[in-house]
Figure (cartoon, helix red, strand yellow):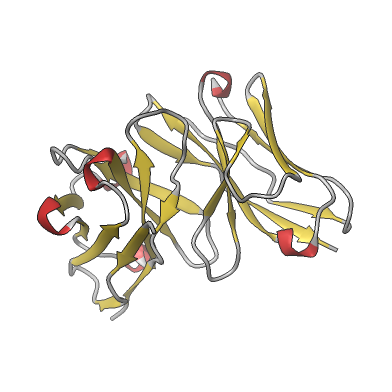
Length: 121
Length: 107
């Protein structure tokens, strides 16, 4: 069955960096984009960007340009989100989710369980 | 940048029909998806390509679109449908846009 399994919760100080992983299984890794979406406590969903696994091409939301890096390791079907220069309002649940590359409009059909990143001094 | 606008909250009595709208510039030219998110859980897509229901989603969920407004309709709403609902579209087929979310309360 399709699974996206994310790394565990993180607590970071302001100014630090965090790297979250998302291991995919149950489907052909290269056939689907991996998106990263975050959700601050009590707030809505916020798209951060996506990566194309087969070539590593990335597209980031303008808001995160310069602070976010998405990478992948195809040998272990794992994607990574790194966010630098953390601020208090980066405290959120971070989700990975996949989207098919073979058709448009299909949505983000499977999501990871989320990784809570807390920024605290 | 494009924005998607949803009502913050919708209330419905059990068995009645709930409608949640999503409006945005040029939404008529974009595919729309709808997600359900229950407390403490990851979002789940319920509608994709404007009106197609994901496998396993009850038939009481339906999607439609007219002009720049998409609508999620839940017919015969049940208590288990109480959740946050988000619409989603794409900008230039790459950037993902989410609506602000609608909290559905089943009274």
